[in-house]
Image (cartoon, rainbow, N blue to C red; front, side, top):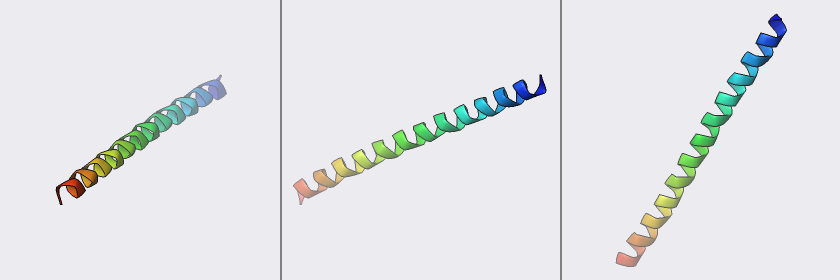
Length: 46
């Protein structure tokens, strides 16, 4: 019975970590896109 709880606990931790990782990657990707847009914008002004 204890093993089942351990497995469940581990699964939940891994799931949370994975979700956080995906959110981080998404945020980084959006930041990069914004930077690229900003760069193009600055280039068009110059």
